[in-house]
Each structure stands twice: as C-alpha cells, then as structure tokens.
Length: 149
Image (cartoon, rainbow, N blue to C red):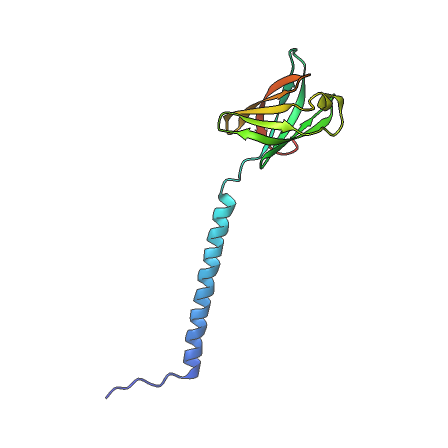
C-alpha cells in the first residue's frame, strides 16, 4: 500500500510562502496597470478661457474668464486691470447669465456695476461673452486656455 509521506512543516511553510509571493505579485501588477491607465487617461479640460473684449471700436482688452461651479471670475488685463466676480442667475445649453457682484476696484469694472455677463458656448473650447450694464456693452470670443497663459 502506497502512502504519502507526511507533510513537514518546512514543506508547508514553502507552499505558504509561494502563495503569499504570488498574491503580492498579482496585487503589484494590478496596481501598476491601474496607474498606467490613470496616467494615460485624458485630463479634464481647463476651466480657464482667454479672449479680447471689444466695444464698438477695433481696440480691445485681453480678459481671462475662470469658470467655477455656479460662478465665474473675470480678470480684465491692462490698461483696465480689474477683477469681476459674478454668480450664475440662469443657465441652459444655449446661454448662461451671471450677475456681476460689486467690483474690487478699477474704473472699467466699476462701469459694470449692476450688470451681467452672458456666456454662449459654441463648442467645448469656445464661448462668446457679453459684459453689459446700463453704461457699457463689451463682447468677445474666448478660447479654452491652460491657467496663466
């Protein structure tokens, strides 16, 4: 009668060690695969847009718009240098209206008190914007940009 030799503790320890190493290799491989997918995944688009606001004439002022949930911040550059904050009043796929909050300095922005900014998307990367109040009406085309460009 053939009998199997008894399993010794060193044989059992070796098998346990092999199973543990195999599990660690599988976990490491899985984490590497997840990391590779995360690194190659497209990044969400920037919420910064830049463009030139124009009144009736050919001269304009470069402006950056940063969209936040239910708000926007518009940085008006030289020669006017001021910042506008506005909160969403109405939004739909065709146009969003933002009420301009009291400006933080700058004559250009002061002229927009009690005004609004209307944003009309043309594509995920392009919008038109109208900055209007009782005293001013400026508009321009804006393109998605990386922050600080």
